[in-house]
Image (cartoon, rainbow, N blue to C red; front, side, top):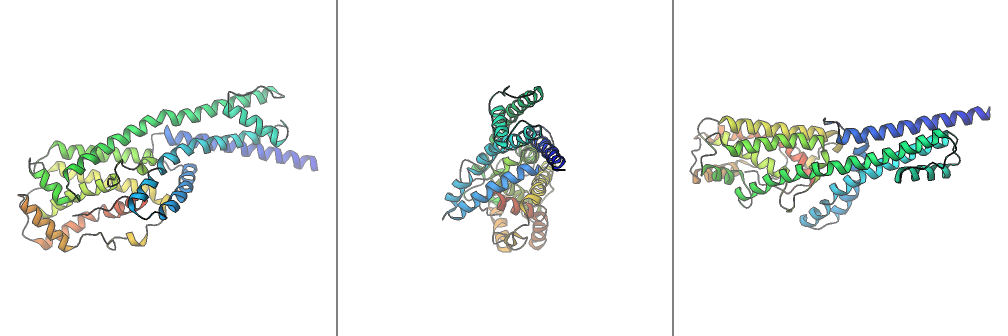
Length: 351
C-alpha cells in the first residue's frame, strides 16, 4: 500500500512539474511573441510584487522628484526580474520531473536541474530519458533569456518614439503646460483650423500608444528622462486641447482634430481597461468630479480669455461651451486619472 502511495506521489509531482514548465513557457511566449494584448497572470504577480516594494520606498520620499527617481527604476527592475522568475520556475518544474522519474534525492535533482538550466546541460544521468530532459531544459533556459534580450531593442525603440512627442509637446505648451497655450501656438500657423500634419502626428502617436502599451504593458511604467514629463499627462494635454477647441472656439470642427481626439480617447481607455483588473479599484480621491485638479468654471473662462488673446474667436454662449467641454472631457478623464495614479505621473493643469 505504501509503495502505491509513493508511486502516486511521484506521478502527481511529475504532472505538477510538467504543468509548471508549460505554464512558464506559455507566459514567456504570450508576453513577447503573441501579437495580442493578453493579461499574463504570472507576469502580473511579478510586477505587482515588485511594485509593492517600490511603492513602500516611494512613500518614504519627501518630494515628487525623489519619488520619481525611485519609481524610474521600477520598470527596468521588473523587466529584468521576469526571466529570473521564469527560469526559477522552469528549474523547479524540471526538479520535480527528475525526482518523479527516480533520478535520486531532491538535492541531486535540484543540482541536475540547475546545471542543465544555467549551462549547456549535463549527461551525468542514469538513463537516456534523463539526458533528453537535461538538454531540453538547457534549451528552454537559453530560449527564455533570448526572448527578453531580443525584445529589449523593440521596447526601447517604442519608448524613444513615445518620448520624442512628449518632449516636443513640452516646448509648445508653455510652462506650466496648458491647453489654451498649446492652442495659441497651433493658431500661429493655422494648425487649429485646418487639417494639418501636427494633429495627424498626434493621431499616429495615440495609435502607437494603444498598440505598444497593451502588447508590452511594462512600457507604461517607463518614466520620461525628465521628472516633469509623462506620456500620461501629455495625452491629457492633447485631448484637453481638442476638447477646449471643440467647446469654445467658433467655427466647424476640422476632421483631423476630430479623428485625433477619437484616437486619443480610444487609446487611453483601452490601456486603462487593460490595467483595470490588475490595479484594483480606482482610489476615491480620483473619482470623477472629486479631483482637486479638476478645472472649474473660472478656469474655463480664463482659458477662453487666453484663446481670445491668441487671436481665436470664442463662442458667445459660454454656458453651453462649458457644458460641452465637461461632456467631452468625461470621455477620457476617468482613464486619464487612473493611469496618472497608476504611473505616478506629475500633475497637469487641465486648462
